[in-house]
Length: 178
Ligand code: 3AM
Image (cartoon, rainbow, N blue to C red):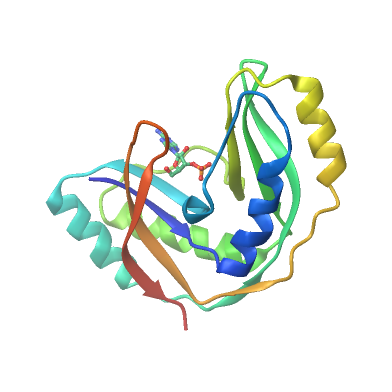
């Protein structure tokens, strides 16, 4: 199973984000609203024993709920090309703490440490040779985006099946935050 840990988002917020998908950017594959999520940790392929260890470790984690505000938009680049268009997250120490706890739990479950810096975001579109000028215009136009805060009351272990057009994400386990 291909797994990742993420926050799912309430429908009001998904609806708000879906509003971005109308903008005309050639080469943008917009993520469907049911797929929006905020990845806390990508895990990757696991066998059933590993998946069970991961589940146990995450279930033992104790964390508190917190408010989350999405704010700003931006792009990720690889080799000088924009690959992803995303909505950002207003500074959030509770989110960082939760991510750190998840990291510790996963390492206890035997996973190698994550080396990449945590850059919290919700992917809005994957980009295939999208014109950089259009992207810059989009970012400029929407940079003041700030959503209403939402209450994060759980985090979720998702499985991901890669589809032809879009991945299919399934919430496997929800872990409540106190
Ligand atoms: O949250 P986003 O959409 O940015 O790109 C994948 C998606 O990111 C990412 O994990 C999230 C859930 O699928 N992902 C896929 N393969 C990955 C990998 N090998 C990866 N992240 C890190 N390493």
